[in-house]
Image 1 (cartoon, rainbow, N blue to C red):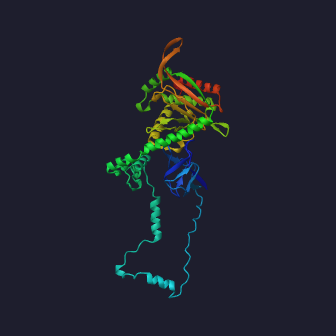
Image 2 (cartoon, rainbow, N blue to C red):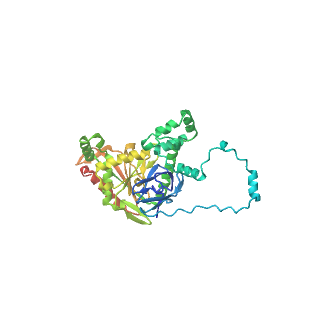
Length: 420
């Protein structure tokens, strides 16, 4: 018997709300299956199971908010005999009463006369049947998209009362909006309370601020900055994209991420965790990628094994990850296990960014916008496309010498984009 617990979906997460179970007692599950939806301060996350087995018991009901690490369900090994059900309480038998005893006589006197057989109402269901029906209704799963649930919450719509028109009968945004009639009622409701998106954004900022305050308080940061000439990288990118279909074209971000991932293999002091006073280098390079949310706030989902994937795969996975992050549809495996975080504010117009390390990681790489700048090359002064790269690193795990070599590796790798 093992327990499935509320996962930690980031260092700034202290608790989560169980939105919905995707399994029931008796269901067989395999590693990687989605078993529940959990609402954090940032998004609704699809939570995966990490072992094979059979769901034995659900310990937390939908709607409950519990701390990280709280047991949510119990699992038994496939083929194992389920534990015997708890013995049902048996009502004590009535003491034998003699005919004409006072209590029985009093009950008979108080009871109304029985109606004739022809006038008797239909027999009511037995209490056990009523309880079984109620239990079945209570455990019925309501399938709804996370977006539909958030809109329903803001409009005061009960998704359990809706008939879904989405795949598999799932309740969609359109179903919720149709149910929120008349429209003026929804407008009035929205005027009385902040929209759910604004509340979530406020909670996300609070959670991030708490994590970053702890980071600056506990981690001795040091910062390094370098400028990288991207003339050759962008020329190669333009020629490569000209040969590709529109959907398969690469953005500079794919090259930047690949360069960081490969450089991290050369500098293990930048790729890992500082736990219990010790640096623990990671065996893989899982890049946390900072993604800004439309309603405000920041989430850093994980691009796994970025050092083993070429630029085309990184681009495809990055596009999917950003889209699902902003739609609020992420998996638990895509949060919480990044070994090094990259933030890119170039599309926002910032020239450079000096980030704060996301604990327990030991480094963060930042990129600003790619801008034309004066640049001396082969003895001639000209204008080249340049990006400012910064490194925020933990002085307990590395020093400026190792940090400089890491940034130099990023620069060197970007000069041979065809190898990325």
